[in-house]
Length: 440
Image (cartoon, rainbow, N blue to C red; front, side, top):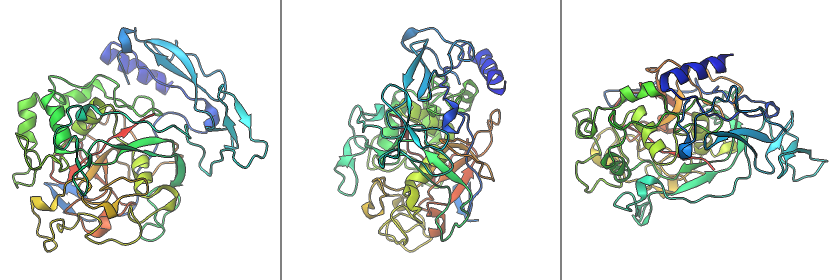
């Protein structure tokens, strides 16, 4: 009933009912958002300082559908109901997706849940359950922001400034313990299961964000379409009509706002220049969400981001391992080699400048440089179960959102993979940026 009420209310706002996927119950998780909160050390982003401490329009012109009445429930254990070009359809989940109450069976190519029969290669999951999808094939595509291949959006990133700024690396499914590293963060009571997803190797660069701004996007005059940027396993997690009011009125106002705090530590420039490979800062949660949706992706969930940074079930203290020094990350205002605590724009490094700090699956700057917005609302307590979960507080437009990873200003303790933080979604500070996730 709660989901139906949400669908009705969203329909009244948009004039078009939401298109959602409805997953079968055998996976052990509903597709609603339940998910992240509370953990280890927290800090607040205030004034740029660092202190420790759905609804979519029909694609292809198709008519909108109401899944509460028009989309049938799945007909087998490994089939999901989806909306395609304005009509209901069913499609099998990928073969070898774990299924069954205990995760001890797997989907076959026809969508049947087949018992493993004691085969050693059969997909099995630890608690709390199984991700929705496993075994996805690698995908390579060109994000919208990289179409022109300009500085910061072409082959000009990484330690040698000759790697693609636009790569997106697969993170394979698995289970792990959220905000746990066994050393500084020892609460192991919050397991999670994460499906296959892709995560951009680099934080959003100035060059890529410039393409977004130049296209007139991310403003009230041209807001995202309702429902875009949704998590594929969380109903109603896409763009909401009311969020458009939180964007700047027009492109001129956005350009001005990107020079935040009045301390000359913003990375944006009105014209292309030396900063194109720096990560964009001074962006709000709404702008980060809008960028990723426009770019063909979405914000990662907190569970996904933490999984990638911790190396999944390796539960790394830092994305690369146990110890930290300035050769692996930009933190404590030492990115430019200066003494700790003396902050300057030069302490924010071009993305991928510290390759020895890459994570298990090749992602750069998951620690330091900039905090990164994720999809989740802040919650002091981590909620369970978490199977492809997103923490949301529907109706709480101004509720704090989660940030992860620490920044160029943060002490070493704050750039740990297990550390969490939050900021108001309209906060615009020089130590927060973002990176995008992408689906298969």
